[in-house]
Image 1: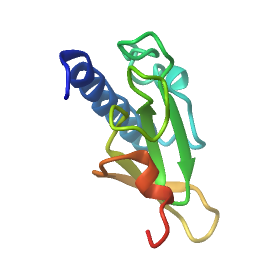
Image 2: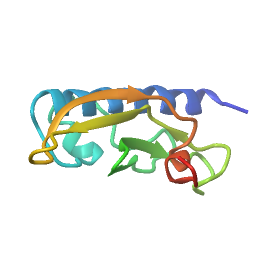
Image 3: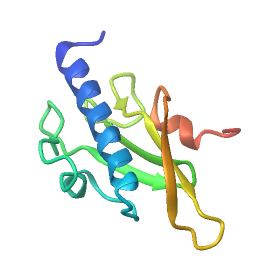
Image 4: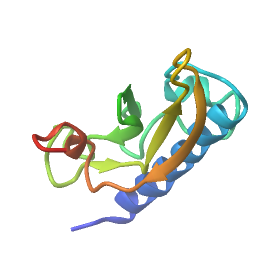
Length: 115
């Protein structure tokens, strides 16, 4: 069951993805953590509604932020993730040239076989 705190976390994760989008559109590169994203969006929370730090990762698919939810265990039904910010890289120097959003149900979908 999705609680009001879970919905708050989901809204905050969407804000984190928007900040990552702004990060790339501002010409910044690299894989920032949520705290670094506060440079482009100072009001971002760095902790979820249960007091745990928001987690993030970048890989070949892009950037995703997530929380393990109230139970604190990854891969369970109470996890929540942000829209994935797909990073478009230059073929010449691997710099980020654009970004966009992709919705997934779980950050673990990015690492499942066949994705």
